Length: 159
Image 1 (cartoon, helix red, strand yellow):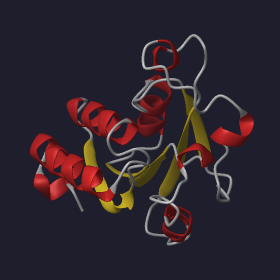
Image 2 (tube, one colour; image 1 turned 180 degrees about the vertical axis):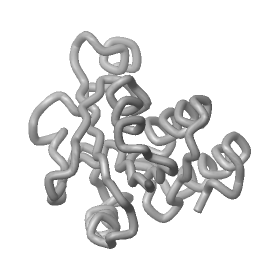
Image 3 (tube, helix red, strand yellow; image 1 turned 90 degrees about the vertical axis):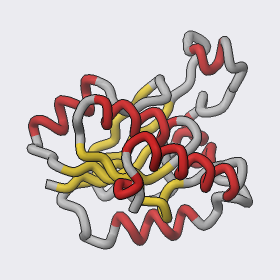
């Protein structure tokens, strides 16, 4: 089975650089190319190192963590870390006999990156959908991180 894992597609990350993501990810969800789809949401808190150490105050209210498209009743996993590769996701993958995981979403230089490496290191066949991952900073940063991920998990896994 093929899983589309849409990481942290939340209103917090929409800006001039990423505005096209709403239409693109909506089309991807509706494409029927994947056997299953899971969304993740990053939820920040005052107990989180992202807040305490990195001093980032985003994703701390309902509006900023909301997903800007219809999730069509697909599973939504909340997380408080960069990686989505946690016990809940691993159990989901095992229970649903997932063979291939395709990553889309935000931010390629943070949560997508961490998730891709963690899934790879846990021996999951992981692919990055290069046209459906985004950087809130710039397209240039996205391209650089995709090159690094290609070196780390294999260029043939950047599709």
